[in-house]
Length: 129
Image (tube, rainbow, N blue to C red; front, top):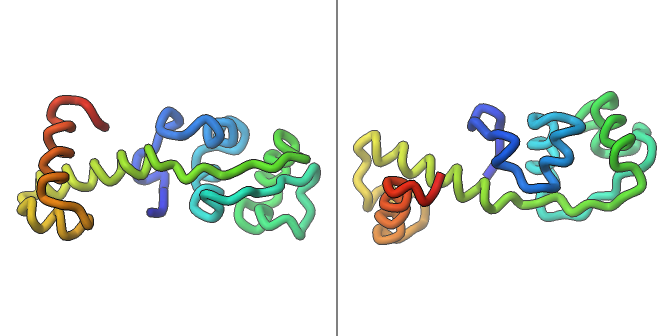
């Protein structure tokens, strides 16, 4: 799943590591890093040289800010499983609100009907989202 700012992702939705990035480079740039490198260990050099792959992804000014804050470290980019789950639940609720049958929603999301019903129940009870 690709994350975008249009999904309404907030600072609080992010893991601690991603929040640390977002404090320095903002949420949109942080989401670019997550989308490109989630689950991988990345080395952040002390200086953003042209060979630094995040220069291409973020642009040199943003990559330079990242290097100033985290230069000389290796960081494992989170997969953001909690955020993925939240967005999946929002999408299921949206489909159900649009009148899509639970069986079809289950097929679209690769889940059982029972699991879709449980997600909808949890949303109604305020346990998720």
